[in-house]
Amino acid sequence: MRVARLRARLRGWGGVGAMAVVCALALAFVLLLPGTQARAPGGPAPGLGHGHTTEATQARAGTCTDATAQNLSPSPANATGPAIQAIKARGYLSVGVDQNSYRWGYRNPNNASGALEGFDIDLVHRIAKDILGDADKVQLRAIPTNERIPAIRSGRVDMVVRTMTITCDRLEQVAFSAPYFLTGQQVLAPRTSSVTGYDASLAGKKVCSATGSTAYDHLSADKKDGRLPASTDISTTVPNQLDCLVRLQLGEVDAVVTDGALAASQAAQDPTVELKGPAFTKEYYGVAMKLGADDLVRQVNRILEDYRKDGGWKASYDKWLLPTLGKESASATPPTPVYR
Image (cartoon, rainbow, N blue to C red; front, top):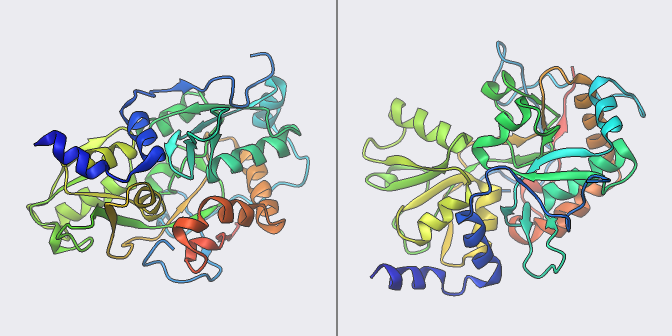
């Protein structure tokens, strides 16, 4: 029965989906990507509305709400500091990324080079180009969702560009750039499911989320506060968010909660699943860096300013995300930061 069920789930999934299953089941705990990826020398989402400019903000802990901000203003061109000097002395930028999020950071089975591709990967190469003068002077490290903050704090990477939501709790552990993408939490379930969204239809259902994700934080808080049915089982958590899709395909869970932008990409991979109901939060992705690396944060903010103004952001969105999110989504417009 299980084999037949799996077969039915995977029907029509295609090469990218099959790739995702393999990647999601692999233990990419902190994997240094192979030499085919550029290396160091020598070594709206539905429910978010329509395409208007969104004023995006973040805040420091203490006066923090997840939707407000105190962003460091961008640095002047060619500004420097200890964090940037260390990167230049080393000769390459070390970045934590994803390798199995379709259209964000993933291995395209049709790309013979094996290089990672996607919206976040484009941003990484833009940052490397601006800091080091060469988009390929970057070392990509694939890290699971629950290792993003430890990788930064331990110094294993200079930054993380991996669909990482800016939150008040995280601001106590890492620094963030100004927001570069708007999204919101959403429910993913089989098309034939009775689940209708983030609502009472989740009663008695098993819901999967990634460990250390904002999805799990919302599920946990809402269950404690009674905003989620008491019978909803949220005990299934996984290191990588894509593992939830695999659990869903195996019939081990009834629904997934994740960022709507990621959920839309997963629905594109597997036509047997779909987004259920509107997004129930408003969240922003940021580039995460080490606390105290203010020179690097300001430099990245300047890069993001240029990336928005010169059309680089839109070109990347149109290439990777337009097919799944559309041009009318609020996500189709880069957030406009408010600096302190």
